[in-house]
Length: 393
Image (cartoon, rainbow, N blue to C red; front, side):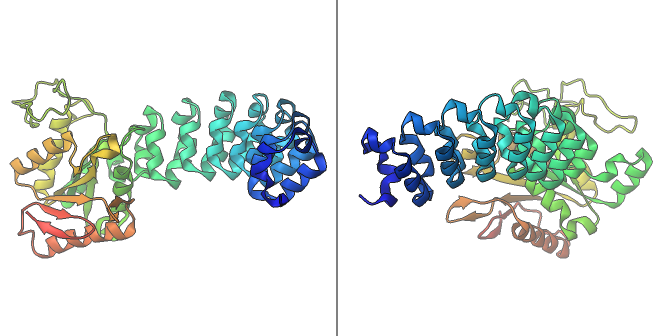
């Protein structure tokens, strides 16, 4: 039997061969792809042999899983493992998962290795900052306390806007964080009079998406919002984008999104005790239907439109075709009542599989919007935009 194939075959070798240090070192040396497999089947004595374990780890860090408990608690061995494969920290001892130096080495190479750190170190700000600097989505593994830390979360959001869905509730309502994620316009922080001036001269785009700040929800809505707002035509073309996911939601509907519930955002039908600003604008303590209708009315007044992101139901654990969410169906009904232009945007797809939104897909969407304005907004029928065709219904 050739040595180069023994990584897998060691399970069938005799106890004498599996305990032969010289032979095992040759197997590990020549079978880099099976360093972990080789260590898995060696004798208990060799699993506790530091030279053998280090040789295996230098081939693949995950070989640490098959080392003895003693060596999994050896810092030199653990460092060698995480330098090769950062997530090998999963197999280190409980004590070493609480070793700050070791965890910093791991998360600096792969932020997602933070998943295996101790609870204490996941609550360490230096460790958290190092992890999210490498991989913004590592924010999902930091402590609840740090998920509400503005410095840590803004670092993640600046690199990947969609990471906001893993932040704490305070950050999800924070203006600066929402602006960084592209879900909130900077003008919201201006004074009331200045806001009114901006609104009067800006065309409003109202986005209709599945709720996407929740950690189990569809994330592409957040990405789409950020990319859309950064497009030059939208950014410089006197548009303001309203994203309902940037606000808390209340409701007069016990089932939240029951299409048959009579409320369509008008005060005569809404039974929620809505609260308003001095200027008469809805606050966060308003029924979402009323707040959304208010935005639709502003879009109508300013020559804007509603843009609905249509995603497939299976992303939410269901089976079916791309379709509006239940809340989106209500939002479409309200827009139609107001006579507002509606665009349906489908996720880009390749070979029948949905892809992430990118700059090209956003350019395709914006080009259709630009064309509509160039034609003086004459066509008020529903416009469907997908990766293969554009149609009006």
